[in-house]
Amino acid sequence: MRQRGTTTTLQIALNQMMEECKLKGKMTEMALCDAWPELVGNMIARETSNLKLHNGRLLIELRNGAVRHELSYNKNVLIDLINQKFGIGTVIEINLA
Image 1: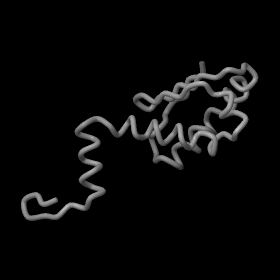
Image 2: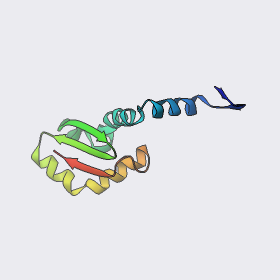
Image 3: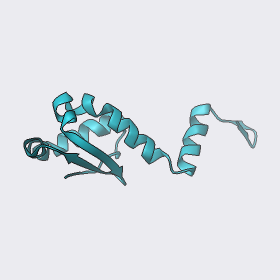
Image 4: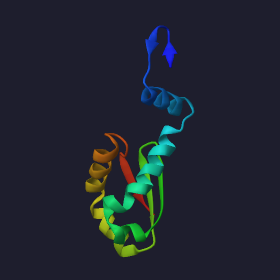
């Protein structure tokens, strides 16, 4: 892709397009859903009914109260794990439901 005498890599062009179409947040949310079992383990992933990411806030809907209690104590650790994998500032707050 050429713009005013400069060349742009395909990755940069796709990132610009995703930002212009406001798809970057949704793509991050989908990638987070795919990586969820790797981040929290299979047992917690099985008890998770839904994940939503909006403006740096991750809403985790859980089926099991014991798992909800466990995650409530480890919110900061989980935020750090997610931000290491997806970039600083991806998740700033976790809400459990």
